[in-house]
Length: 219
Image (cartoon, rainbow, N blue to C red):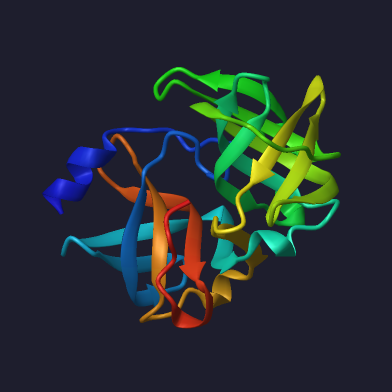
């Protein structure tokens, strides 16, 4: 387990932005080995076994893929995108949040570590013909959707403004659905946001599962 623990350090559980329920907490790909009440044994894909306590406030999500065409007005999105010269965005990653995460990270901000920006917002309308230059992240609710040469073009509205984003027709979109913790069962494939306490114990407030037994893709 040393490899896993060396990645974790000592971190604090917090609210997430851009789809993460634990901001700054690494999500580790692992399979559920055993469940004993609120204690779960996970085996990481790297081979390490971890005994993890589930937080009382645990959020469990099911992760699946949908097509851009499935995006509807009113959806709340997290959009990572290339920023265009005209200020619009071309999406490189899109997460659809469940209703329980609506409003998470609402706004538009830079991401200095990657040179990108993040925008959490509500979709209002869409336009087209951008030329990528650098990345951004947008979390938003879809207000209006249009087609642009097979792409989905959405206007993302957030509390202090709005951004136009084009979602390419071939871009996989990640759908996040909140479910009950009873779906954490032996054999389930998961992404686990693990927190290491000062005493070395491990806990999590966020577990993402693959839909219908599939392996969840990182988001």
